Length: 84
Ligand SMILES: [Zn+2]
Image (tube, rainbow, N blue to C red):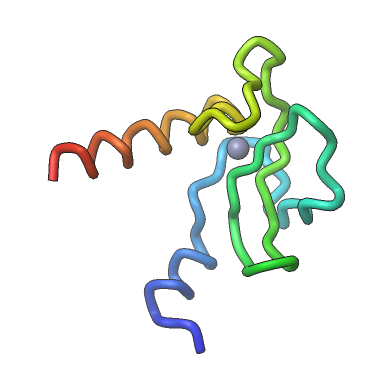
């Protein structure tokens, strides 16, 4: 059962301009495509899939598998957590 917060997050996830609003399944992602989860759960999770610059792509490093837009969001939420 999804909470109201989950539903709201699913209806209006943070999205970069021009991003495919449906997102892509992990299995459909090429390398260097943003792994930011937009909606769904488990194997049905859909990811942003925007192209990520080769120079920032560092699998395993926090936030380095996200496009510029989602890197900014990830950094901001980390800063919030650290400030709390
Ligand atoms: Zn992204």
